[in-house]
Length: 338
Image (cartoon, rainbow, N blue to C red):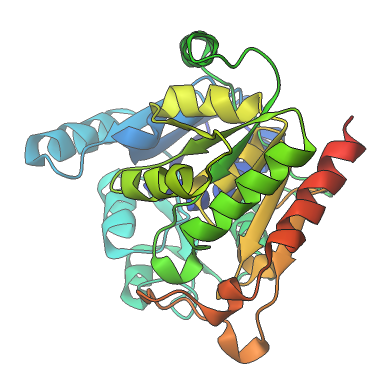
């Protein structure tokens, strides 16, 4: 039975994809404790993704690059007098932050499951999770705090109105007033990426077959990838655009389809209810794929090629994905939602 005096702190600071894989567990926590206070501490740059969520009372930004910002964050956490902190990240920094919050009850992964095993020393309750997907593992922590594992994951996110209006106006000024798809050539490391020349050829073939523009997005340090896609896509005319996180949410939420590798934008689009084509190589989509129904996954990795090492060369498994593979996947989604 939930008590109104329960005060939960969710700790998951970064990265975008992992934050989104945590959202369903927090939604389940809210369903189990409708009258409780549930706050989430997260790195400041990702806070807009969570703000406005009905699953949360407060989103608390954490400034990891500022000593004073970190101190102020800890003071704010202690003032809220949490009864329970749940660390979904399993790192030293996240487990220490949970401890510094002052919560007497601190839930986290067992040493063998935490990303940094010794982080488990800061928990009062250590959980051996069940499931294969990261989201399922996160459900295990929420279950320890009284939640039930739902049959269907929920992503109670809200697209910021300002971001949606801004990107709509920018697209209109750039000549896109109708339907569009989004391509995201970036990724955390090159082994997870599909080469820009492949995205370019996809853009060419897609524009030939469909009366729809392609929007190419990029993150910090990825502009050269987007420019390479546009350069090689001639005579197709993909539009390159840089966005704020608020604008990105609006852009992805209203796209007909999003094509990307295992990356934050792919998972954000899926969480917002947009059709996605996920291109997977060394990472396992059964563990890290979009945790939604209807996502199209293109995956040709052999079992021995599954790896989470941050290699700087393109994975043979990604190079095995053909233009036709991605066209067929995108067309099937577009036809299903026509």
